[in-house]
Image 1 (cartoon, rainbow, N blue to C red):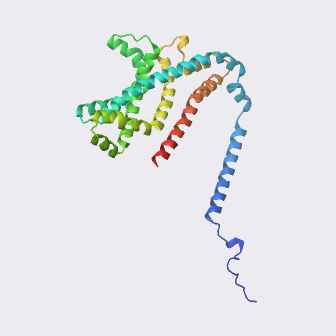
Image 2: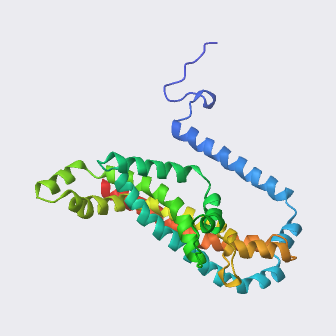
Image 3: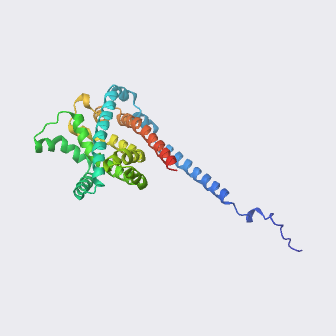
Length: 278
């Protein structure tokens, strides 16, 4: 009995090799199955009764809801005020960082490294207690304290972001502006800085998101009832309410109402900036 050689293209199924696309598809299917199994395992281990009591307590939510609009507004005010200070000071520091004057560069470097190296918590506490004692001044406005404390920290990060954006502007455009008779200052103001801001818009949006979360430290300044931010409302409600973690769940949802649209805006700006650069 003679063995027959299979014709080309008619190899048995056990000897056929999968194509790369087929292997990738099978690998993804295995990943999905493992993920579904893991989610089912986690869901089966959760005590949904306790979750409902602690995270979705209607009575606790009803107690805190009237306080949320004011706290939401205050959080936005503190964020905007801090960002205004940080953006203004950060722009100056970025230009100093790129200055031809060595003293300016050293001042900017020392400032940036100092405020990037210490926690924002220390800066907030300093403006609440140490600065009034050291300089004999009384900053009555909580918004001003928050703007200065958060803005000084944010300026260090914004300065480095802007410096990278300024250096990303094509050198040829600067040379073209100078050849047209523009001064160095006018070239920076009308050519370099506007383009740098367009380049750094996505990371600047991320800095705004981080600053929004840093407003959770403002409660250390000592706030009146009408000055409470979202975190202060959540802390007080957590200590007094009987609804478990429901206050923190609501506060987290409020922060997401601010940060999620900003995240979408950052991705949109990043995509648009990338398309324009191509």
